[in-house]
Amino acid sequence: MIKFLVIGDGCTDVHIYGKCNRLSPEAPVPILNPIKTIKNGGMAKNVKSNLIKMGAEVQIITNPNNIKKIRYVDAHTNAMLLRVDENDFTERVSSDVISKIQKNIYEDFYFDGLIISDYCKGFLTETDIQFLIEHNDNVFLDTKKILGEWMYDVNFVKINEKEYEKTKRYVDDKKLNDKLIITRGSDGCQYQDNIYSVPQVDGVKDYSGAGDTFLSGFAYQYMNTKNVKSAINYAQECATIVVQKHGVATIW
Image (cartoon, rainbow, N blue to C red):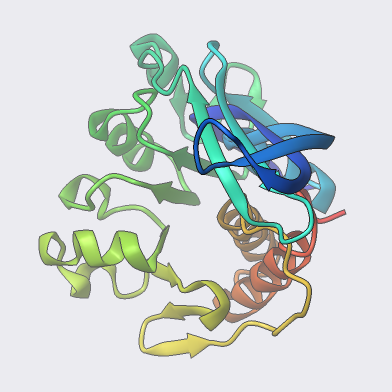
C-alpha cells in the first residue's frame, strides 16, 4: 500500500442547493429555498479523502481552525449564486512540526510521497515548503503562491492555467520543464510540450475540488507506476468523475 503524508490548508466545504423561483422584493436578487445541503472536507482534506478512496494510507497535517466555504447553488441550473467564506486565514504551522518531516518520516510514520496542498491561507510559508522539498523525496506541490527558486527542487508542481499566467514571468521554465503540470479545465492539461486532452462529459455539475482530485490521482498513480503519462491520464479520469457530482466529491 502506498503511503502519503498530506500537509496544507484544509477547510469545510458546504454546498446549499435550493430552488429559485422569484426575486426578493427588497432588491433584485434571487430568493433561494434550500432543499439539500452537502458538507465535505475541502482543500488538503479533500486530497486526503481522495487518496484514501484510491487505496492509499494517509496521514494529514492541517490547520486546527475551521476555514469554511459556503456556496449557495441553484439546484436546477447548478449556478452558484453566492459564496461565503468564514475564517479565511489560519495560523502558520509550527516550525517544530516542519522540522520533524525529514527523509520521508514524520514522527513514527514513514511515507512514500509527500503532498503539499498550499491554498495560501497562511498555514505554510515559502520557507516551510522549501524545507519540506529539500528534506524529502517524491514531493508533489499544488500552490497558489508565485513560483520561484524556493520550489525548483520539487518533483512535480501542479497549477492551473490562470495561476500559471500570473507566475510565468517569475520562473525559469527550463528548470521546471520536467516538473510543471498546467491544468486547463475541460481543455485537459499540459506537461512539457504535450497537451493531454480530457474525456468530454455531459452533465457537469460542479468543478469544486477537481484540482484536488487531479493532484491526488496524479500522485497516487505516479507512485505506483513512475510513469508521468499514466499518472496524468489517471488523474484526468478521476477529475472527470468528480465534476459529474454535486459538491466537493471524491471519486467514489
